[in-house]
Image 1 (spheres, rainbow, N blue to C red):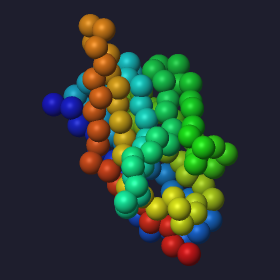
Image 2: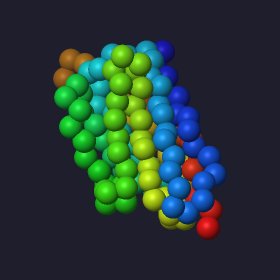
Image 3: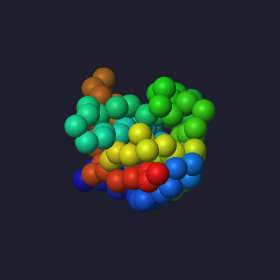
Image 4: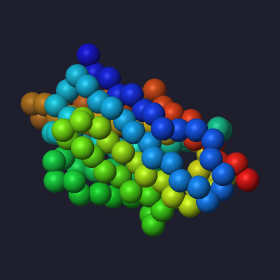
Length: 120
């Protein structure tokens, strides 16, 4: 059974930092591309950052460039999102997504999300 469990969210003041974690199980983590998304109230889900498998090439959405760092630890089956210089507009539920490929088919798995609230 595939599981993605996010943690590390919470309430932080403007300018603060948070490190989100996503612990994965039930699939071959080291072969999966991992991403973070976020969804603010009343808005569509937005891609934040991604890291490839297993080389670790990273890409960031505009909201995360220069302020965030995505990383992975394949020995712990965990992907991280370090967020710095947080702004009120970063308030959202943050989701972890895994893309695993098997026999030419992509399978996407999502976590349940973790709430990040940035207070001014």
